[in-house]
Image 1 (tube, helix red, strand yellow):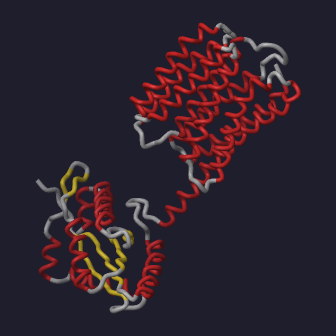
Image 2 (spheres, helix red, strand yellow; image 1 turned 60 degrees about the vertical axis):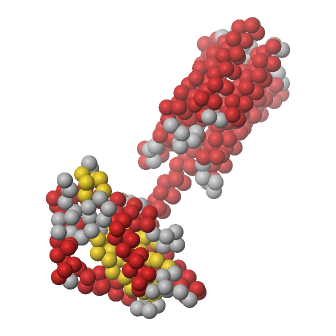
Image 3 (cartoon, helix red, strand yellow; image 1 turned 45 degrees about the horizontal axis):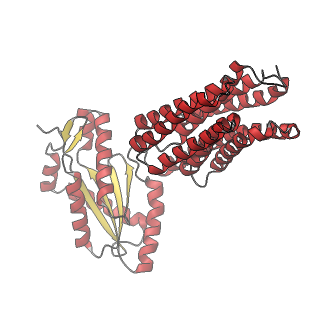
Length: 422
């Protein structure tokens, strides 16, 4: 056993433990894949400690190490892949190409150095790579990448360069992971820098490995660089999850968790900006408030899950029917508010609120039940009605409740429109 590897092995195990603890507070499919990929690198590092200081490693250990590299690389690519594509096609693509690569690493791990035994694997790998890229990913550039990658392996094998061929294939996998993480992770993320740098160094290490093993003078330096990239990736992944958690907390502080709309705090800031914009443009601003008619009866008779879904449907209808320059928010309960800039007069606001009423009162399917809900509106204009945000809101509220108290309107509200329709 090579005791010199133990400190680095212990550090990697400790980092994986930290990642697992962070993952418990920030669980998602990508974090699980990261953790699984790093677990395979831990197995590889453990097997490495049993390598002989000199000479060819045993076939079993060599096989474990190479295939752990391969499996970990495939898992990392899964974690970095485009989530807009179907999971089944992405998984099938990785499995098909991973199996052909595993044939290559397995043959080399068993210390087989006969070129004609590699040729069938290379041919199958090239065909599988090209066909799967076109059939499953629908991308010619992926097909070209597979063709060129396997062609390079074929040239190296034909020259008897088995080690460069195998490590070239591993380098390609980790280089693709670096590219995918660069494209998928948030651009301003410090974790992204560490992850992409780590995978880039890892790919370069695979490319340089056949040369380094023949240069004993560089062995120690190469070993330190090799361990550095694993630490970079592990720390980068932890940073990414923590940054996403902070971003999520910031989003929740400014948005309503149920509907995803801005909350009262964010709306107040946007209303201030809208008023400033209105003053600079010498136009008018409409503040529109609305609540749902007899919403309490929906909760009481159909249950709170149905009520929550109704609120989500109403929020979606409002979001879809306001302009991009408007801000719609949920104040709480069944109350919503809209700041609509560039409204010339009350008649324009009436037309605007009528379009929102029509959108809200369209029948919706909630928990397999057709429902229709009504809404009551009130509005106030800036600067015609008030020049203060608090006064605008109070006036809009007063007008909405004054409308609700009208006898004819109250009778319409009391009608059981909110109940399930036949």
